[in-house]
Amino acid sequence: MLKQLYIKNFALIDELDIEFRPGFSVITGETGAGKSIILGAIGLLLGQRADSKTIKQGADRCIIEAHFDLSRYDLQPFFNDNDIDYDASDCIIRRELTSAGKSRAFVNDTPVALALLKELGDMLVDVHSQHQNLLLAKQDFQLEVVDTLAKDQEALAAYQQTYTAYHDKQRQLQELQQEMERNRQNQDFLQFQFEELANAQLIEGEQEEMEQQRETMAHAEDIKTALYETQAHLAADEQGAVSLLRKSIAAIRAISKVFPSADEWTERLESCHIELKDIAQDVDSQLDSIDFDPQELDRINQRLDRLYDLQKKYHVDTVGELILQREELQRQLSQIENSDEALAALRAELVSLQEKCQQQADRLTKLRQKAAKEIAHQMLERLIPLGMPHVRFEVNIQKADLRRDGQDNVSFLFSANTSSPLQPISQVASGGEIARVMLSLKAMISGAVKLPTIIFDEIDTGVSGKIAECMAGIMREMGEQDRQVISITHLPQIAALGTTHYRVSKQESASGTLSHMQLLSTEERIHEIAQMLSGSDVTAAAIQNAKELLKIDI
Image (tube, rainbow, N blue to C red; front, side):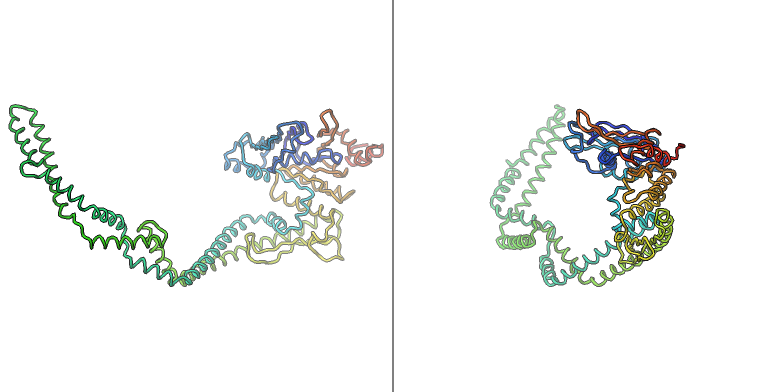
């Protein structure tokens, strides 16, 4: 629950530090006093987008901080999953805004993204404002209410997993059909391209090898001349390097007995002799292979021209890429040949997933139908005491096509009297009736999801007197069930039933209009409620009525 709220430099609030208590609290104050400002600050803590214009004029920074007690709610897994320190008795959420437009959010002094703050905020506080009454016109909201009260999250998650697989398989089938249609239309052309590349008898690396052969042939005379000269210098009978080196070895070996260093030199010269003999033999063998063959050069040029033409045609740079292109063409042709089998296999998988989807959707429908009956029963029990003795309420579930949330169209049907037929609630209910319906729904939902804190912003619109007192009774009952309920109200009947009462007021100062919030004592509550009953001129009768509402002995 919300324990403490601190606001600094936000709109009309200079600085506010207020403690909140468990149970049912009420906030009152004149229109424009600043109640909506406090709600706006709480909204920022819950992850709403920030606007630097909300910073108090003249300030460069705005700070909003709240302390929550989470000890009765199992929220530790959220903190563990997001690597945030967890303190069940004191969870601190802080939001900072600067006049430069920067915004930062913290949970227990750990910086967090706005999306994460909103995710946590949704688990901590539910703010029900007047515009939320419009949700009753939306089928997805009505379905969400049914799912929440049906507690079918596990069944819904299983269905959605299967539906996602089913939807993906539909897409795969469609893509395969489109690809096969394109391939069939281009089959002759694909066949021609494949045969062209197949007939080219492509070999990996052949282009580089032939380009080297062509280069060698183009300089055959220069190469042969160099090889002849090298061979002559190495292998001439008397003056060749091999012969001279052999003579040097013999001379050095002859003095080895009298000159010890000669042994090492002999070994080194013999290694050089062996190496030079090998080189001379290699050069001699290459001399026979180097020859200018015009026909061979013409063949190489023709082959290279063919490879270059294919590469240009297929927009690639190497023979290897041409080979890959040939293999892809072969795959496409093979796919065309085996298309019926592939389609049949994919359709069989799709049918299987559809059947599984349908089974899980049917299970969801049964859970929702069961919950719908209980919702209708509980709504009557709650609405009749709220001044609607002839009310009828029904959750209508109609079967639809499979979609991500199941196969059910949900509609809340309503009639305030016996003479009018049941119709969608948004079309026939008045503002006051919708307020009572939403309060009843919130009371049921809060019991199912166990939200720590629920804030009602003027949910009493369109009601008064005894009905307002009954609505306050529902909120007080909600506040007694391990949750905190806060109601912003203009009605004394609701304000009187709060276990805690706060007043928001504004005053003029040298720095402008400032908004304040304070916890009221018993005497202050009497005066506040009396003022709500009689206006600014508080009479003795109003004081007496206030005490009666508060059940204070007169």
